[in-house]
Image (cartoon, rainbow, N blue to C red):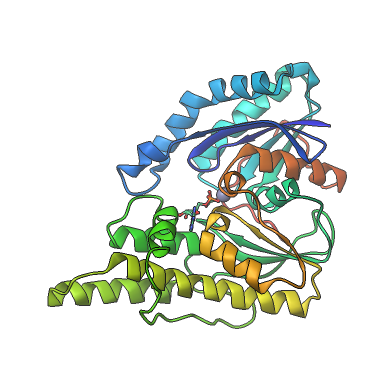
Length: 330
Ligand code: KG4
Ligand code: ZN
């Protein structure tokens, strides 16, 4: 089955062609990061306009570089939500137009299901598995007992971990997105400034306390006129942020007898997290997507769509609507 997939939920315009839920024939990603950097974050109105400008060319490139014609496509998939509604609608309308013009079935895919299925690019999944989803908008632990069966074990009660990275980076005077900047700087210093590791009940997370702690620390230093060691602060913040993820993930894997542990979402690109995960989960199978497939891309949506249809969860319809707060689990 050849799937043409579209992802425009935030600030990446992406179209891909994937085959049989495991092979990428093309995956074109047009990033708007350069444009939003000047504003220190994604500006929704600008994101929508950039998607409009880019979508047609990205569509064309995805088909050309896959070496296929529109007729060869078996299924069209598009991110339905969650995300910025204006951005989602550009991708949805482009996918609808293509599907309708070529009389192909169309399905809507949950953005987080896409991030989770980016792991299928590494190899088959083993159930039951626990997946840690860490992105700019999500921090959650998902249990899967089979393909496309998602059970939420816990989630952040305030900020997402990626959001905390971005906000801390901003107060430290680093660029947007903050995750990669903190990641790189943290590798050059030791994490020896004490930071709070929040511990919520069960499998829930919290990042607002850690974020406020860094902001307060910085304000105190600035008021006293003390020098600020940005690298040391980055390393210490990162250490506390990742420890919380590791402790909760380990507990979930043990409690549910998971055979596999997976990491998904933009923060899965973090080098310190990857290292800690590799050291902690030596007794179960492990999946972390390749760097290029951690952040938003259409290939992950195409792979997810394949399993969504196979599992009989297809919501095939040309009347598909975007949902900025679409839920993964009931
Ligand atoms: O999944 P994603 O591309 O978009 C969302 O769905 O949110 O994730 C983007 C988030 C941003 O908060 C970014 O700072 C973070 O992922 N991120 C990282 C790294 N690379 C991206 N965070 C920590 N370390 C990284 N290397
Ligand atoms: Zn994402």
